[in-house]
Image 1 (cartoon, helix red, strand yellow):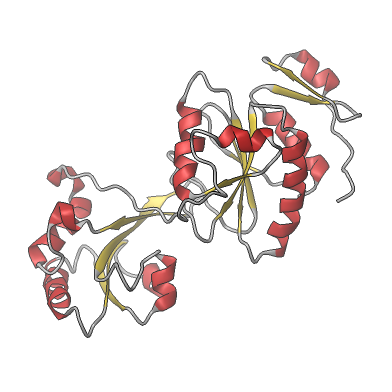
Image 2 (spheres, one colour):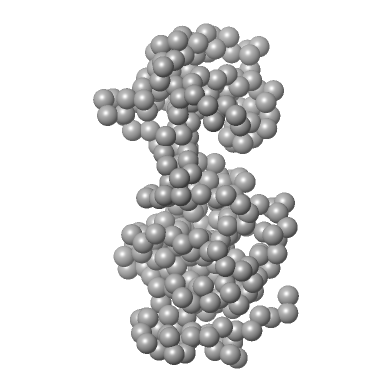
Length: 295
């Protein structure tokens, strides 16, 4: 962790097997000498399993590989907005040649001059049948289920939906850790809320394992500084997301949803839900929350 807190704000990290990747290491050392004033160069051996796992690198199939870690970005709350870029052999050529490594690094170091665009690499769990795809994600919600997102489906479901001006769907997403007791407690409330709002197409309750998946947001970015972090994404992509800071109980979360929903979500005392296409004065007069159920 201390590696990424000192020196230049751009780090070039070579992940390799030192006993098999001598040529790549030699090429990397040449590049490091030529760009030593621009980036910090680090060699991470295959024995560092935890580091490889963090960056989602398979030591049996993806070594050697090179990552550029850009720490120059700042969010509105003054935390780092870290971007990671993975070396693409099909684009830059064999990683064992220093000129190719330099071309990859220069695409970030001299972005205005090279006119080469790098796409940030985001960790994501692989797709399986538990996870929805962009074609059927509403079916999960209509069944009263919490939508399970990955890094890839966050973009293809949440962000694509929000970019559609004709789609008025809001998303409430829990960024959680499986081992976190607070995340488990919140999960129980979200399951009840998802069941409660299953008839409402304009609201999706979702969850994402933030220890295995990353998301990239424009603007002020998103800082996950603790688990769970509950975030409301309004239907309009032009509007900023809202991080929930209230009590993690059923009643408080329902009130938060009602306050910020694009479409009015009116929940009566007996649990019946009424929807409206506008947030008129009736919201203020009728808005109330359902008493928390026995969990």
